[in-house]
Length: 161
Image 1 (cartoon, helix red, strand yellow):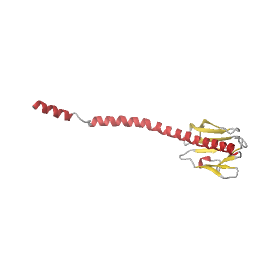
Image 2 (cartoon, one colour):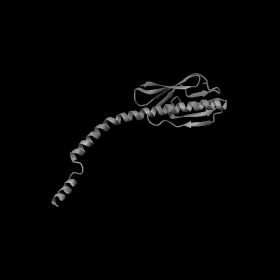
Image 3 (cartoon, one colour):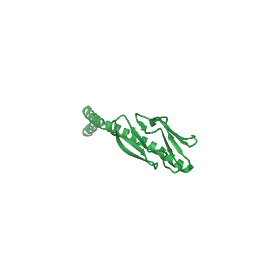
């Protein structure tokens, strides 16, 4: 009977972690987190730039398709060449079709013109337009959105200063 009692006591004694084991686990976790957080921040900023470029391209494509559908000019305008403050898609009478709010974060979107006008053929009225999208980083993190005379936008990576 005494032998059975000693096994029960030993079974309860082996449960749990020691303080040293817990401290080592926390140290390893802290090292792994310090490596992961900067990469995660970079990934978030890259995804934000991609999303913002896609929002502009989506608006341009929408304006182009509306111009073709309506058989009349449709414009995408901003208050200035600083498009990150938002833009409006309007028909040829100036009636707003859709508005886009300002960008979140530290991104800047600068265009070569304050307005893009699509003709009823889907082509641009005037010259080709170029936008530069950058955030608070430098090097190969920016995007250049170019709209050709045919009205089709394209995106390339570009260094930001």
